[in-house]
Length: 193
Image (cartoon, rainbow, N blue to C red; front, side):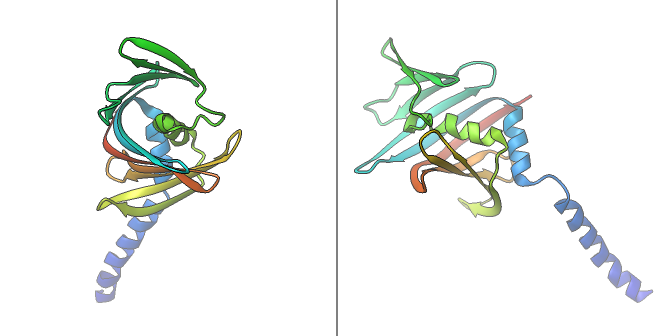
C-alpha cells in the first residue's frame, strides 16, 4: 500500500506532462491568435540596418483585418507625425495634408516602414520553420522562426511572443542570412473575433 501511495503522485505528474505535450504547440497557438485577430495596436521601436548606416524610429501601427492598416511615426522628431496606410500591397504616405502613393515597397515588400505588415503576414501564414521555448526581457516566450524565398531574396523572421498572452515582444527580419531589421514591441494589444 505504501508503494502505491508513493507511485500515485509520480503517475499523476507524468500523466499531466503527457497531456500538455499532446496539445497545441506555441507556434500553432500564436498562428491561431494572429488569424483570429480582428484589430491590433502596436508601438514598435524599429531599427533598420543598411550597409553604411542604421535608421531607428518608433511607429504606432494599427492593424485592421477588414480594412486598411494605419501607421504613424512617433519619433524621431524630424519625421514624427508622418502617417501612412497599407492596403494589400499598396501603401500611401500622408504628411502635412499631402498624400503620396508608394506602390509596392520592393519586390519582397520589405522596407523599414513595412516591418509590421511583413511580420503580420509571416505570423498569420502558419508557415513555421522552427519553434523554441525561451526567455526574452525576463519573460517566458516562444521563439518562432519563419522562412520563405521572396522574389529577390530569402526572408526569415524570428519573433518572440509572450507565453502568457501570445503578444509579440520582439522580432528580427533577415534577408539572405543577414539581419536587416530589429523590432521591439513597446506595446501590443489584440482584439480577437
